[in-house]
Image (cartoon, rainbow, N blue to C red):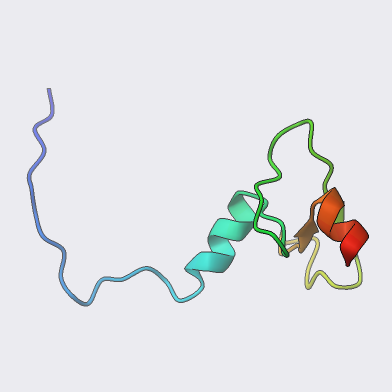
Amino acid sequence: MHKFKRVKNANTLAPPENSKDLIAQSYMLCTECGDCLIDINKRVYVCRECSPDLNSGNIIYWCQKCKDST
């Protein structure tokens, strides 16, 4: 078995500045309400004009409720 060591990180280590954007992309969070859209039963809407780059995965997502209100 592998034994883990308890070590403190240096103060210079921190999450990247765009960590909130990375989390929103990986969990497909709605732009307005922040609801996770990964579930199969949820509808996901994407604006092709508003999204910066569709090919690289930099996409802006909306849930159905927020799409109707926006």
